[in-house]
Image: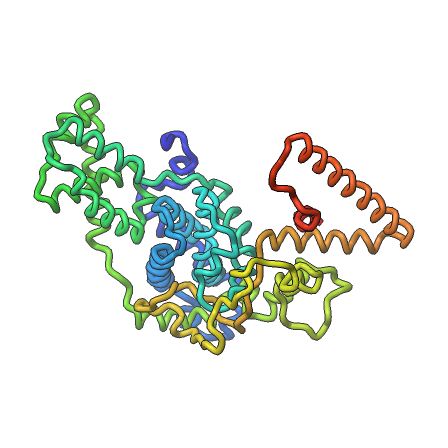
Length: 436
């Protein structure tokens, strides 16, 4: 229930002034921490200003919606709404100079898919991203826990879609309107427009839903004022003035929204490339070194190797491209020879997904459970370094006995249950590899 939810308690604010204050605070904090990087230049010329950050994020909200709209398989509306909530919440506590919105955008959608139980593997997810899927996988998985932490682990989102269905059912039941279903296209369009505003941070889902219904009614030359005053709030008229004010503010926010100027956004993006935190830039040597040290043993780090991909490390351990995989996974995921340009990564008229991570093109690999597999391998290496050869051999002997016992148990169950489709030893061993 929304009234007792974390969304109302921690992520719904009194007015737009509070949101502006949070964003200005994060901007000032970043500039204070990185002031030395300006090297004497004017701070406003070197760093992004709060208005520039807002303009940049508005453009990336357009990219977010377009990415969700073109997603394959088709994405439910609740996933889109949840992703927008995550994106807006994240940048109340962070600045785009610290974390590039392109990378956070993809992570927000990926986490939203999980939370809303839209079953999409990381393999399927990155297939919707242009450019280097290997790099995209690294970025999304590396930022997943960061995003969840910045959301204070409050992941449940109350979207306006259920209240909309409730209003439509009630209108059909108690009002005199003919065919209320004709309101639906206008409602959907209005809700899509609210994603580009801060409505979800300032108003309740039911207020947004009612604003959408009243807007749709006005577009269809229908009047629902009597429905709201005489039926909907007949027993709570004291709340009516506040509701009318909230609906009016939401409709004004949608009406006043203007798309950002693309030329201005390009200039801001170039400025961002100069002032962004290189420790969080996947293309920087500093980031690659940090990621490499995070997931490898210090003794195993080559001093002259500046590149690192989690998937590449797994391949070295026999968990990458050499593993058996489905035929569709073995096909190249991008046309060979196709070149991509950073400046064209987010063109609005593109026929493909507008989320792109540009680097060298890689053939398809299966990245399911990739992070867990890699961490398990790292732990295994550390344990082997602390054991003597005889202890290692004893551990392997015990493991073989345990696996043999598991296989025998499964065989007995197959015989007892008279299963028609017998699991092969190769399939069982392949499953076991996921946990090693």
